[in-house]
Amino acid sequence: MSKRKARRPGAAAVGEPPFKKVLIANRGEIAVRIIRGLHELGIRSVAVYSEADRTALHVRFAHEAYLLGPAAPAESYLNIRRIIEVAKEADVDAIHPGYGFLSENADFARACRDAGIVFVGPPPEAMEALGDKIRARELMTEAGVPVVPGTPPLSEDLDEVRTLANEIGYPILLKAAAGGGGKGMRIVNSEDELPSLLAQARGEAGSSFGNDTVFMEKFVERPRHIEFQILADTHGNFIHLGERECSIQRRHQKLIEESPAIVMDEATRKEVGELAIRACRAAGYHSAGTVEFLRGEDGSFYFMEVNARLQVEHPVTEMVTGQDLVKLMIAVAAGEKLPLQQDDIRMAGHAIECRIIAEDARRNFIPSPGTIRGLRAPGGPGVRFDDGTYAGYTVPVHYDPMIGKLIVWGQDRTEAISRMVRALDELRIDGLTTSISFHKQVMQDAAFIDGDLHTGFLEQHPHLLESAVNPWLDEVAIVAAAIVHLRQVESTSAQATAANTDGVSAWRWPQAKGWRR
Image 1 (cartoon, rainbow, N blue to C red):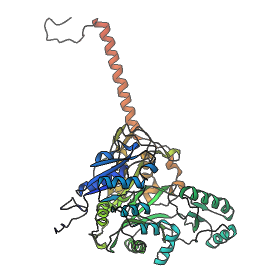
Image 2: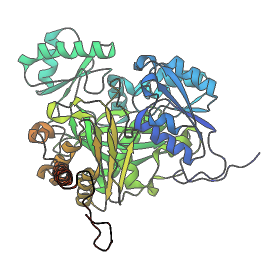
Image 3: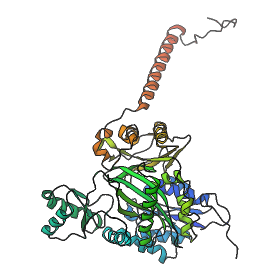
Image 4: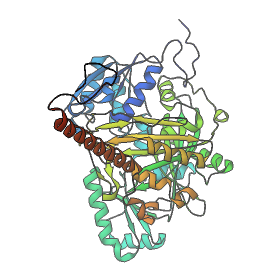
């Protein structure tokens, strides 16, 4: 038997790769990101796509590509039966789900296992334990991880619910047991609001998740959203790769992420990082995962939830730690031991990520899909642009309108902010409305620069959603004026020619003899 050579996951492939062929059950920038990692490891990549994504970049980059079906997610990227069918046809060893779609679907992870295909992610049992928020709260309480004071599932007895709310104290937060993405959540400030908001939360939870069970928690005011990146292998080894702050959100959706959080010192990082590891260990977790916490104004941390997958914002962790999370996930899925110990993790500098989305911040972030007429990515030191698009690409109406992620690194937060402003100035996406100008306004806002962040930041600073002055408009105006001037010169010249030459050129060559009018 040949012995596999030691390989550093962040380095180019050396020797035998952990898998021969991997299918990416996703689309867009994350599919491109994973394909790049696979190719560096020497692994063949298999893309899947819907009819709306025939010309998508991930289809072009992969070694092989297979059509799943129509554009509707239920008939393509959420179609477990079809994806497993394609995986068997392509004879892949493993499936990486990316984020979103089926990445946290225990049935999909189980279907992969039943088909003899490695699922690059946590085991389905861990997903189920963490996916139900009530069960997860119970699990964390047993493990000694602090949770926000709250209740079991609420009964239909309104008087009983009122009593529980009064015991916790207003404001309270109603949450869907099977929820996520802000669905089924309502903030209740007084007993008078409780009946109607409870009915709304139950109705939204039922329509969004097929389960109208809700519970309540004490609402933490002005909290920071701070999360820890976890890695675990199948041999019982766990590490964390520090934290990310994701407090700039709209409707509970993250827009800007950074690492490290400026409120963390090394002692707190060590303490909360160990809590995050304890949370994942309690669920029998392995692979990459993120443990999300709320940090109150008094510095207390409360467990919120575990995202059992690779996160959208994983690049900021990669930028400050120098580790490649996709390659580490692949190694762990192949059964390898983590090549790192906790002491090997060093956070250096500061990284910020802005999600570049085809939507209009001035109009309540309404999606703005369309065709990209021109695209120029920024560059220079410490700049990374992860995307899945190109000039001429049409952003489909069927999926999340995120175009890409702009990530910068600096020696410190001040340099990272300055670099992000410069990179946003360089980034050009023509043909549709994007969040670029919104991000520039946030980067130059005094409260953001001071680090006075919390999850209600945008509600407190609504001017950031107003129209920003676009410096590129000055450039466009100069070019337009030059074009007008040139056309005037050409017109004057043409008129003079017509009047003076009767169709013969008026140009003269003084030295030429016999060629002068």
